[in-house]
Amino acid sequence: MRSGWKRYCARSISSTGAPHPRGWDAGCGARWASAQPSITSRTNQPTGWAEMGQVIRWLLDNSGTLLLAVILAVLVWVVAEQEANPNQIRTVEGGIDISLLNKPDNMIVYGQSAEQVRVTLSAPSTSWDVMTTDRISATIDLSNQTAGTLELPVNVTVADRFARVVRVEPAVISLKYEPLIDKAVPVSIGVVGSPALGYSADPIEIAPETVMLRGPASTVEQVTAAAGQLSILEARSTVSQMVTLT
Image (tube, rainbow, N blue to C red; front, side, top):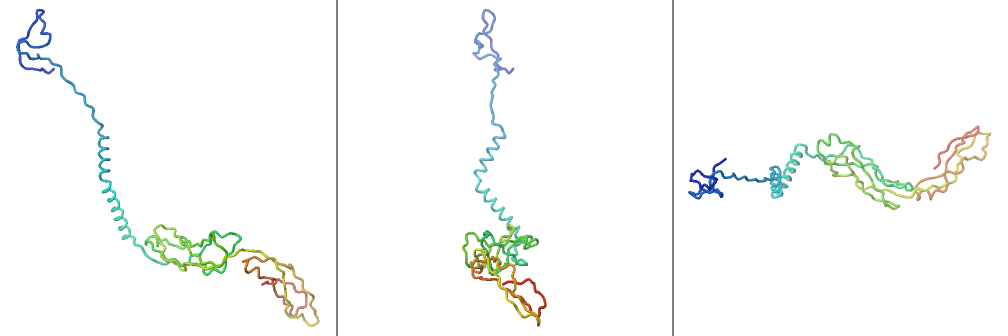
């Protein structure tokens, strides 16, 4: 135990031989040796939390600089990627079939000015290595369209996020869009030629006597009969054959 003082003085002794009750040396007035040591307790913040707090404060103070650094890094990556894999503008080999979207079953499209389009794309060379017509779709949307002659744009999409459509030829398609109707009309058959000498022709029998037409309303409504021709030229027996109707 550490001694409080190194100086020796005469002690004041009571009649009982015990040291002075206050622990003072009578001769010098100093506290006599054997003082109790002092103990200090200190609580420190955990080192990990302190370091994390410093990092967070640094991030908040430098957030603008960090954001700029990230943007610059992305730009550098994009430029490097483009230099290593540059874009090429080329026309896809082969035509792309046009598909009609959202056509109701009771409507019909006819008189379409083109069935295919030619597509020019801008894409990296690696995309061109695998580019085929199967990866490209060309569509015409008939949603909310009314009957009549229409001029509609062709929408082209590519199954490649790096490819960009540069040109579509033709970009607009003309077509007729009408209700689809059915109509029953009689069959009319004309006889061509005469049977062989000594033979005569009886009235022809037609089966069926009516046929059903289906098509655009403007066309079907003008039809009054389905006509055909039957040749009996130099016939010597009953003639039975299929006839094409128009």
